Length: 319
Image 1: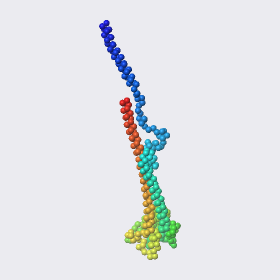
Image 2: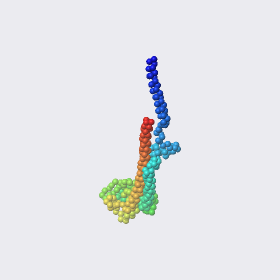
Image 3: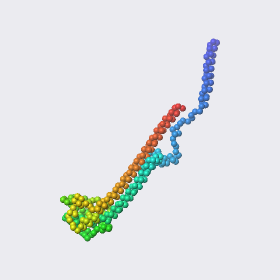
Image 4: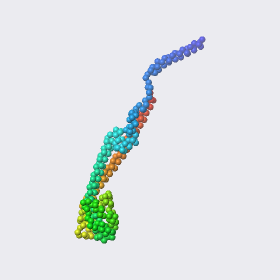
């Protein structure tokens, strides 16, 4: 009986404690379950911009995200890749440089062509192959050269230059005979005999022809003023057919004028060519600038994405 009473005393407190714990659980944790809870996780995609599908697939959108496309766009039209990415100042600089460069190139090129045509017309009136051939015959005869000058003389015998249109003079001369005489004719200086003539007269109308006749001393006798003062001078003297190289036998005014005219249009051609090189540089610089701009932007986006992922991890950990 005593034992039974003791057992009752043990179980009664336990029952009371269990009941109290149950009541505490019901009163506390049920209230907690009723509190609002997060049902969705924060995703990194929530922070991304999702353009419409029609735009995201366009070339414009790809030029904003793909370095290779931005590079190609600016390589074709400088400033295009920069403009697609909102870099308007740089886009304007590259595009303006392109437009001004093209305009300046076309202007210099057109001016050079106009000057070149004017120079050619100048030579047609003032340089004659007949005048040059007659001087070459006189030069060879007075120095008693054995270079076939007699055959050249037979071709020009009684012929005078047509200074109004010297292009017709080429019908009077066999260029092969003239070149044969040139190849066997040496330079006669005041006190010695030099090497043979350095050039053959190029074909009429060629670029080399127009260049050489106002560039090399050998062709000065073809100019009209030299023809009148030396080749057809009444009192022929051997000193008139020697090269002194001391200022006494400098070319006359027409040779220098032809030289200056040729230099003028050649200089404009050089400027036009240099502008083309600068335009090429503008294309290259603009293309690489667009490439690096997209790469830098993509790198920043990746860095921000990594930071957002870390923030997502922090939120998940705390909640």
